[in-house]
Amino acid sequence: MEVITGISLPYTARIGRGLYIGHYGNVILNEKAVLGCFCNISQGVTIGVSGRGEKRGVPVIGNRVFIGANAVVAGAVMVGDDSVIGANSLVITEVPPASTFVGVPAVRSSDRGSEDYLSPSAGL
Image 1 (cartoon, rainbow, N blue to C red):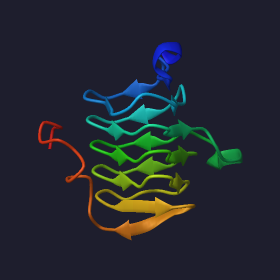
Image 2: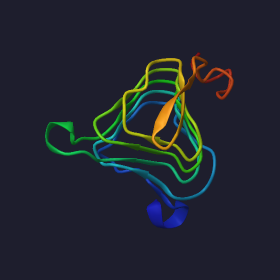
Image 3: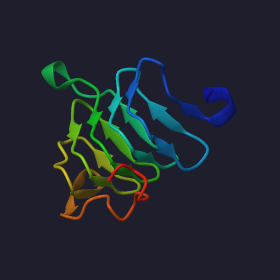
Image 4: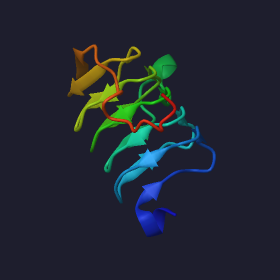
């Protein structure tokens, strides 16, 4: 699949139902990544391993999370349900549920969640 679509979804990654990848190319998931249900991932997103010692690990992404274009979520972090990761952001800390994080490194910019980014059929 990676050769044809430019999207790397290892069979060992735990991916919930309803995953939506809006555009072709450069989506990389670590083999141990965990994604909840009805996540929306834009092009150029990396969800990967990072950190040292006890902090080394892979992200756990909650349900109904929107991840903008070219964002990176790295390390043993939890991204809460109904959250938004802005385009070109680097997430290396916990993201509380129903919040928006943007920047490098990403910081909380809003208490609004992903409800405006996901379709009504996304299990809301």
